[in-house]
Every structure is written in C-alpha cells, then in structure tokens.
Image (cartoon, rainbow, N blue to C red):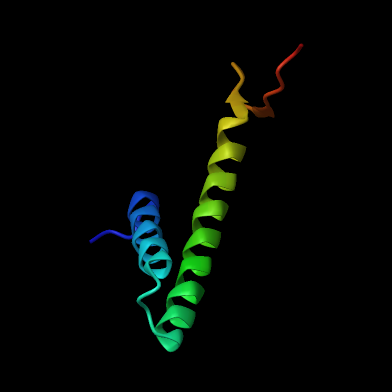
Length: 71
C-alpha cells in the first residue's frame, strides 16, 4: 500500500480510535501515540507544502510569484 497523505490520515484515525477505546495496554499505547504523532507531523508538513504551492501562481512570463488576495 502506498504511504500517501490519505493513507497516513486513515492510519492516524485507526490509531486514535484504538487509543480512545481504552483497551490498549500502556506499552502499546505509548508506541501507538508515538506513531500517531509522527504521522500527524508528516501530514501537517505535507499540508504546509501544498499550501505554499497553492499560494503561488505562474505569471505569463513564467515566473512564480506569491499570490495575495486583495481586500
């Protein structure tokens, strides 16, 4: 299975449900929590990079420029 953003989110959701169930022993809970935090950081980093890309537009002359919404 490809380890893309969507799969990481699904895996994170599964871990959160397992932890919320309260049926995980302490050692497993620590391991699952650590993995969940790693996945959350990876997802957050991916979203930040995507946001940076979306906030840039390609001008007619081919130069990338920051996109700013004028109010």
